[in-house]
Length: 231
Image (cartoon, rainbow, N blue to C red; front, side, top):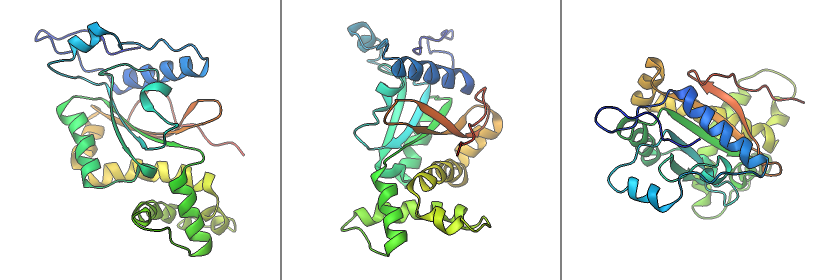
């Protein structure tokens, strides 16, 4: 599904609901998994249509990993998604400003925090936690920004809590969920938009092997709940 939504009287596409935006991504990912992508909105006509303005339905804030290209895994076209990427989807003020631009200025209805398995930033953080060894150069800055996600694990009681700190899979999921919470906590604009129902923020994990995108955290209404991880 592309963003050729019904237009308003002024010619601007009508803003989709968060559930409609998520349905577009869900359908696109299902096509990608089936190896039947449609590659929508990628022709010359679409390029000409977008010369003057863009109206993406979704902001995707994902990891910079070369294997997780947002437009491809969700089978979206030009102008459909506004993409922000950092290693380990770590947050800073420019990231927040970029996401707010996507929702408040461009009118996107959905924000997706996109994590994935075998994430180097998460693995580096798990290694630092297990050994105390710090990565070189400015890579340490990335690890430092993943580290706060550990607090949510340590806050939970249980004999396995410490072991979970060193498990990249557990830390990855927690980092996705924590990033969703950070966006709401740091950005008054995003929190207000979620409260008013104009925007939803979701956490998604991408599987590198089968190409599927799994919903693991939901703030707002996207028409389906987050999936519970299975053992």
